[in-house]
Image (cartoon, one colour):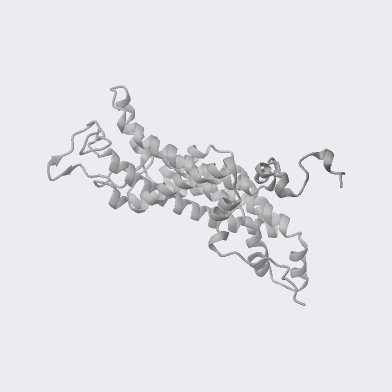
Length: 334
């Protein structure tokens, strides 16, 4: 007599990826929001990857074989989105700006993850004076406005002049300092909760070292919310980068294309009826932040069983398929 296995077969790795697994669980409006977010985020990433192929000109190119580009020219067949006051092609600046944004997101979030997760694990597990010091430092950082803190750090690092990698690391480090306390607080709270669990106590009784307990038992369980935090912080990183560029503390236009800087230079054009220099970089920021935010919020909703199951719970079962009588008065009839 054969018995069926009690455990469900393990799904492929691709099906267990964060966004893919959430797409399978989503229904109704949640699925629509997630799909829109994935499409917008995918277009943003693909544009950054294929920027050299999609952009008709370089991000700092001012002329071609026919001569110098005209300044503040309206959209036409040669310059599809027009040109700026400096003579840059708007379409090329928008396309190349996606590459700058992706680079800053990757560098800043990677640095924030490494520092925030490491400090959160150490603070939550060992506690004591180390925990008190780190909590005070995190609270002190939270006391400052994030954009103001990023401006101060950017000035200290770049001295007001930024090359490509100098501007990238300047903006990334500024964003990292702002984001580290968020990762630190989440990981610290999870670590404090997990170290009181029976499986951690059992590992201590068996003589496991602190390094093994943190790396083998706590780390994997404490970092399950990181994909959600990554998507939300990626949108915040773009807004912080655009804010720095808009205020003049970002990357120089000859070093890289940056949407916030282009918006800053487009301010004077609005009073003259020149709309294309500011509209298209602004649309790029809005759509990118919207896509990343929709992905993050959808993942957050789908991680909560109460919200995820609300749509299914509201559906009325089909009497013919559910095996129940359509008329409640007939339930007692033979």
